[in-house]
Length: 592
Image (tube, rainbow, N blue to C red; front, side, top):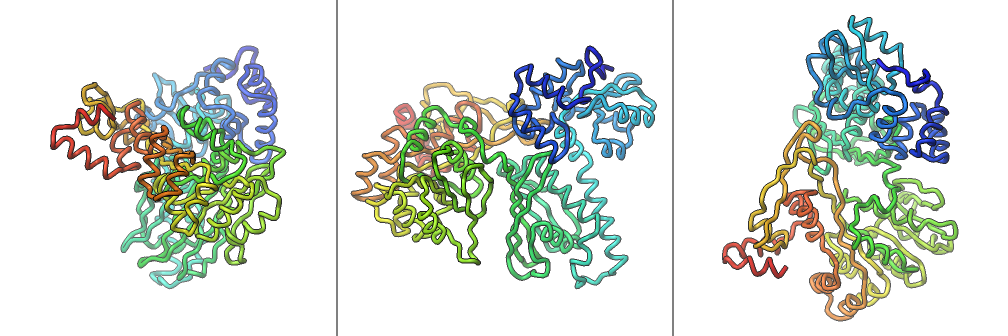
């Protein structure tokens, strides 16, 4: 077992030595090392894990460095997921969970163990003494190990804690359902359940956690890649204590059960900081809780990570280069609007520019930007904050959301008077955003003068590259994709493997980017309809959401079903059906 590299250097013996080696190999910069060391000093953990959490290194590059520099093999995620289940009988579950290691295989009297710190002789000795076997240590990121431990033992651990809580609760209070919840909230099983619930959801890549009281049970679901999945079902007796625990850590009133409440908290999982927004709503069977999970560092990324095609990126650059005007980002809740807004702000953030935002809530803190939190109870609304912001000599203003006519009017006035305004709007397309502003009371000619560009977006699930299933596109699929019927086309369906579970892995944004051109301004001065605006934009090269979705289907990134789900077009669906029924689809598809 190679626990030491050549020359007897310990892997984690000196943090500085590891950092210097990474710099010498060109994997990180001195500035990144300094920031990682400062982060590690504040939050603890290992240097390698901190570098990965900050996004300075990927797990793959760190594993390759590990093997090259120190001679310890790295184990891949698929090897962990496809482990030999018979091995678990040799190692006590308690020891595995306590040491946060994972035995994934073995040969003869040798046990293969994945560890984030494979030169920790104390852990290795403990395992060898407990099993009577020799241990061969392999490197794996702690996040990968924790994720598989969550899947194997997380639900079991939570159910044990739930049973323990129910037993303690009934022995102390009997069947008295009117007992005040705050008396039981401090029980360690509840603290453990809530903590594990958040950690497991984060490691699965969930965006939301739903805690739902039903008639006879308590259901917990999480939204992964935009789709809800059931995680656990608990006895309804846990509802009061679990809700109270969440209220306490998110700063809410545990005695108020009749009104909706909103709160937030910061949670650190595997060294990564998450913003958790909490919403509690009274229902027939009790209070329902939804927790929205947002990685703080994930919102402030570089533009290249948005997943834009070159032509769309050129349109976005053209919009961002305007010195004044309104840039609108539109789409439903959970479509990635905040990420796009923060990315645009990050690109525009320069020392010579005064940027002020007004948000509800402030989702990420950006150095060099002045951010204002809306407080309706104190009279600080979007509209009132905007009036004050305009007296702060801003160059760029970001409005979290245009919700009413008053905010829309002030945003238009600000853009006309020389400010660049960035905001979000809840509409389904770029052209519909214009008609929404008109419905809010903004004159069409004012929109033409004020708005410089509109971005509509959705998130589609990516196909898992390891199990996607190819098939020849049918005629109806080709028509939906605007693809010539006389040309062959291979597209893919979801499969399902150990890596993904359901055939999809991760999400990708699709965009509809519409610069407000002279042709569109002419439409705005004449008869304004969403259809005419879209026609003018498409004639100038804009890709609609359906076109962007089709592009991803043709390239094998996603499926037709996903395209239809997120960018459904009733007219296109009807046209495809009619075309097949009448038998004249070839010409139309070929022309498209």
